[in-house]
Image (cartoon, rainbow, N blue to C red):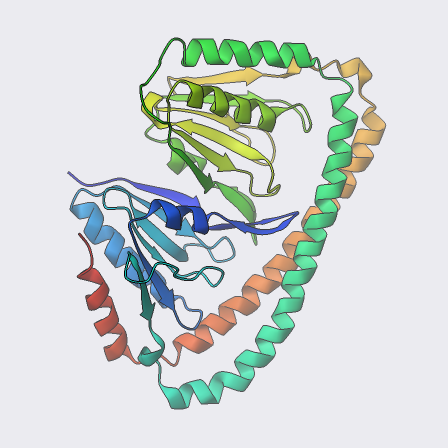
Length: 353
């Protein structure tokens, strides 16, 4: 029987900068292979070969994507063996001889070709860093505007009503369950702003869960706090908790997964709108606890429009950044020596346990 692949974003571009949980996943892993070399599309081929071979052996795994490049893998994690294969510039091995291993692939490149393309790559990279900076600055401005939006909503919230919803959700889904163990807490990213807009992987994350609870509300109505509190309550019952963090606000969660209950609670409002579509799907409706008469609709519309404008600007900048990054990757890939790359792939396939 084949294993299951679950898809996540490896990084997200937020109002507080670029966010990832690779350091946390490295702590979960027993074995980590750190791939080091020029930025490339070709590692995705190796990662997929490792992944498909492991899946055919019945291994469950997680695939982590670069949000700027559709279908480009930054890493994969084999759950049963707790083995992580990763290319990430922001993390390095720390436990040499105790599960962390370098996988340098510089030798798979032709030195002469690298020298030929080097000046072009350098020029493109310097100019491209500007587009990334501009994109992150626009996201930061958008986050501040979103905070204004939330403040306009919060005056209309019945917090007692939201608390009652949380109590009902806990009672109906956790009840009197009490596992005699320490709960395991993990963190993943579901979505990010991409060149094609806000994207997420909820379908993959939730496809094998029996219960999906969709929260419907407004910005600032407490959806993230609700899910964090639900996760904390689950931990008190000994249940493992996976927090799925927001791809646009680094301090907010978009979902909570309780693996033992095969259940998730997710934010199902814009930009990730979801509706019930199968047995086990339910809505947690915040709207009865929002007094619409207290909302300043004209001011909300003005703030929402400013927010949308900044998000569109951020997407444009990141789209330009992604396009230039693609060219840089293609230049480096043109210098690969295929026989040496094949040797690297065969070597890594032998690491599957």
